[in-house]
Length: 365
Image (cartoon, rainbow, N blue to C red):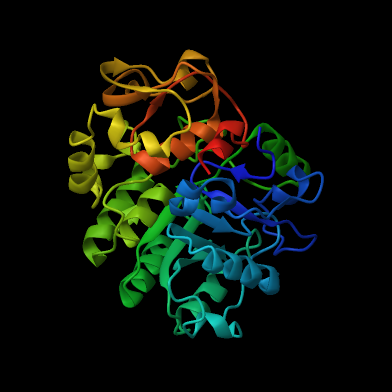
């Protein structure tokens, strides 16, 4: 395996963790990183096709603008490599003194700055909302959006709090990404030990998925229409919209009911793209370093459900239809993600759960 890369669900990760961040109470990144994290290999150093993958910079413990020099240096390397895919920096930091955000230093990169907010000042997050408001006033040269996360039951999910974020998004012409609180077992135990009052929404349990209640979802839907603000539960969908990619690069359109595709501004583009996916594998052979076929399936079951890896399956998980890439070789989850990013197809293959790519990606250099 190629162990100098870190492929997460929506991004090729570049960056390193630090000992200091903003101490948000819902964050478990510091404790979950038992040693310093450092992944600094530029995608196209692995494979030239990876020049098109989405990249996140310094999305580990330690905000990108608490380590501005590192963030800058990674961008320099990506610009030198002529990286074409979208690059996101998600921050709660102060950007007012970051001079290169205000000029054309990184002209040519498809750079995106996402401002994170809790939606209000609270003991669990004392600074992100205030800082986001200040950051929105700074004139920068790159794409922007608002990350309203996590939505917590009974804390920052009132109509007034949510509407306040929508008013800002409307004022600055920005899309909103949002989600509930992720509560993996170690995080839940940590919250309990600290006495933090986090609780899942009725009918849901804490876990990998970031659930919110139907009533909170209805507020987002209502305010999205009222203020004409695009909203996205998935960051890849937001990025694909803001960067005019023509379809969600994570191929969520294979599970439209689960992802609420019917209520999404990207619906027509994504469904049209999926309907035109070809059975001719020669069209994408140069992008995939494995032997593969493309087959049509009417009711394919996601292997995460088959292997009982995912704790929150839905009807869509056993009802995936369309043209699908089929690979008999055992892959990694990182391989599957990158193939989706590059081609737009979902993948039918057995895989090992890991953030590392298979060695075969080196063979296409």
